Length: 153
Image (tube, rainbow, N blue to C red; front, side, top):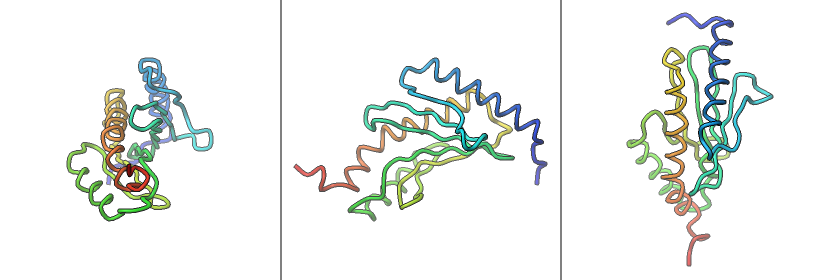
């Protein structure tokens, strides 16, 4: 197993993430807010306004070897749970660097991680773009499956 990054190394990486998210926020008008989680110093968020889902918040968590990322897609389905989860699993095949998973209270999340050895501003941009685009693409179909009776005409 490879050596863990030292505490000073991790702090340098954390400062880079601060800078990259600051630049991302300035250059993307759909970003509502971004910054560090005040309760977890190695965790960041970026909140974006969408068209299909009103807001998407992406969380980045820096560990000793990886940067984990996730976003909440939707609550647990009220109906058609098997069909919804099957759809999510099938959609995983077309995603790069992220996957649908079931999280707390059976909610649907998109998650992924990458080694911090490849972490860069370009990778942060790719991660944010991938998660945001996936939510915008898949949310409308998934929400209509899991809450079908609310959309019945």
